[in-house]
Image 1 (tube, helix red, strand yellow):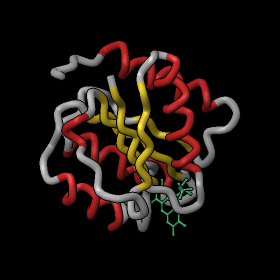
Image 2 (cartoon, rainbow, N blue to C red; image 1 turned 180 degrees about the vertical axis):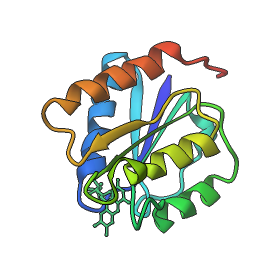
Image 3 (tube, rainbow, N blue to C red; image 1 turned 90 degrees about the vertical axis):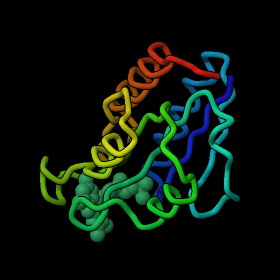
Image 4 (cartoon, helix red, strand yellow; image 1 turned 90 degrees about the horizontal axis):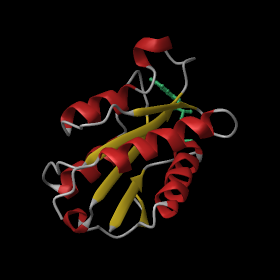
Length: 144
Ligand SMILES: Cc1cc2nc3c(=O)[nH]c(=O)nc-3n(C[C@H](O)[C@H](O)[C@H](O)COP(=O)(O)O)c2cc1C
């Protein structure tokens, strides 16, 4: 079993969430491969049993261009994508908070509701990350 954790992070919050997801994935005996979007070489996503995709939200609820480039690079819509992200309610309140997560979960027709974290996950939100990840791993229908 292998899990891909691909994320875009400028200031580190989304990367911290990705690392927490990786910890939980490892606890399930599954190998997590980290992929930093925009930096790492293209990845063959079809090899993975689980695909976790993460991004922050930008510019009035927008998905960052670097993440859109990654979506195009992948080139198809895998049916095992779970979406996570970070945002900040100071930029437009609940309406725009982590909008990129909603948009991507919809785009990928994800079976799991997206995980939305306010800024850094350190502290009480760590539990949210762990529970959400466990929910994905325990609920997944794997076609490998
Ligand atoms: C110019 C700017 C615009 C932003 N717009 C939004 C937004 O519309 N919605 C949101 O939830 N967060 C917004 N944010 C907050 C970031 O998504 C948040 O700080 C995020 O945790 C950054 O992720 P990173 O540390 O992984 O780069 C904005 C931040 C900046 C600097």
